[in-house]
Length: 402
Image (cartoon, rainbow, N blue to C red; front, side, top):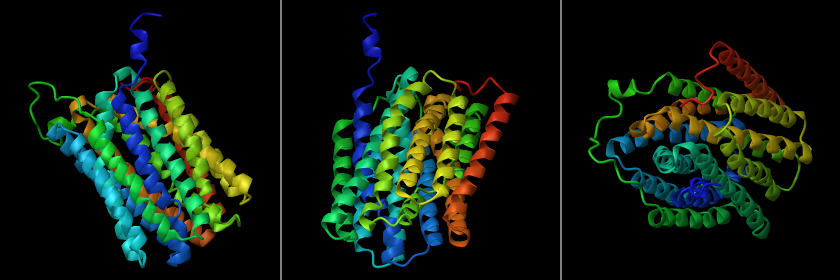
């Protein structure tokens, strides 16, 4: 082995710190989100359609806000300040869930929480791309996503334990969720140093026409693919509602998110490393195959082991595709437009997520849970067919899209 090889295989420490910041914030968020559908339906009397609207509006808000924060981070030439502001807003929104007497404050809290996610999302992803060596971006995004998802695994697990300990006291669990959110902010402030701006680089409006032209066809292809994947995958709140139909005690329902996020966390980094060596479109197509299998299993019944198998497949799909799509955005965007590129990518995905979640809520209320998951499988199959046709028509540009 050459002397420099081991150094090149080590990701920068800041990538690990950003991963642990995500881990802490996801513990905070998922302690609430794994219980929130049950809280909305059981305690506040909301319908599945209202759950879909709240989730869709919240996630779409986060993804739309990413456009503005991404553009601002490119113009400003700094990423960390916006990331800190976004994480702080997310942490400070958590007490509102515990105080909510009805759906109005729940929606407000959910929107504020997701605005915080939107403010931090594109600058943080651009910061990962700025810090990571170009030939290790897949591994860097996979590691951050994996640690993020460890938090999404631990959050519901803590929620289950506290619900059992405190006799299904939703509001007490929501108060505890404030603590890891504040720790995430503190770690980001103290643990990450942003790379210096290149000498002589002038500030310019990232959304000027001539700058947007620099986001070429490869980038916009990735944007389209991201939207298709989002349409094929509705909010994970419906996984929680499906688990409730299994008849297990209410306090154990969040275990469905523990299972999904455990698989997601375990698979994101290995698939991220694989993305550094493998044809990207092949990996995307395989991810859709796994999502189809997940939908079909979840549609087949409510036995607890069937649900666990379905959500495990869902987690594998997430691990295969989410870090990969972020890597593809970073690979296809100019370095000085990465924040803007992530912002527009998430804007389009946000609209798709809102549509997917609302449609899922309507189908759930009118035709039932099984029909909702069967519809997801059909749309995923259509998306897979489109991806394979596009690959046959133009075999070159997306294999490594760089």
